[in-house]
Image (cartoon, rainbow, N blue to C red; front, side, top):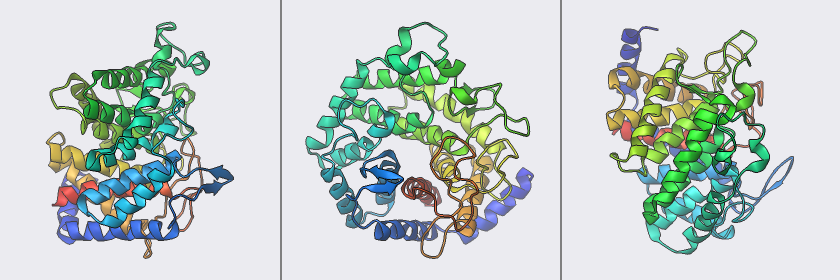
Amino acid sequence: MTLFVAAAMSVTMAAQTTASDVLSVARKANNYFMAKYSDPTVPTNVKRIRPSNLWTRAVYYEGLMALYDVDPDQRYLDYTDRWAAFHQWSPRNGVTTCDADDQCCGQTYLIRYQQVGGDEKIARVRENLDYQMKTPNSKKIANAKLKSGDEPQLYGWWTWIDAIQMAMPLYMQMYKLTGDTKYRDHAMAMYRWSRNECGGGLFNVKDGLWWRDADYVPPYKEPDGKDCYWSRGNGWVYAALVRCMNELPKKDKAYKELKKDFLLMSEGLLKCQREDGFWNPSLVSSNYAMPETSGTALFLYGMAWGIQQGYLKAKDYRPACDRAWAAMVKTAVHRDGFLGWMQGTGKDPSAGQPLSYDKVPDFEDYGTGCFLLGAAEYYKLLK
């Protein structure tokens, strides 16, 4: 599809889609979720019982807080606070966990602290981050193919790119709230380790895309010979860059460093968007060529933000945003707010296959969260 045709389609869709339309769809998706999971304290039960502050639910609350920013409904806060208070505003598995998936819930705790205060909302999260910053990952580091010896053990926790979204924004939030630069600096050291060291470096600067972990760096290939860049995994990183920059001053060196990667990713992602507006589960491969909602929503989130910041040219990226939103509304959103074409939990494009319009993924919460993040930022762009 040429840029001219894409731009023409963008004008047509923009004329048909208003900010009010976007908010209506976002409310529908969220109302579906809140009705189905009316008690936010109930554990999940997919193959085994897990507390409801696990990472999948934590991502939902990130989306809910984004929705609240554009649709300040007290129900959202009541639902959030009931969940967080039940878990005592604590990371999953306590203050000595170093697993980013356990820490993700803290992002919402700190948002609520910023909104209304309350030391209980920040105390355990801070204790947990302080613990991690002095604890080396000696167990997993041995298999991480380090370039520079044993020194990065203290920073080598994020061995999979999903972790960058689950935990890095939390460090930046803590830096903003406390003014203590140790949180920013440690987060950047861990980020650089994942980017440049783990598996020989998980970020392919040339393509502007990330390998999910050391198992997927070359010579690993998809059946068609293309590299395996997992859509949602790249979506996690893309969203994390936005969420981190939102917590940093624009003149901060860390901000500028993350911005460079954001721009590289934006360029790489724009090249592999499908003509229908979605992105494939495997970004540059024909393997599992199909719509996928969670990655598409996260890319919409980042691109809509980048346009508003003036970092991405609207003439190039606005058509991509318009097509992504129109595709999800047309192809994924059910009348009751259920979201189809949503890939289940996993670590690569094969997870949860085959996807479809009607298939219910093993977890619905993080997918709704991704969708709300994208919807809220697109709403701001249209406003």
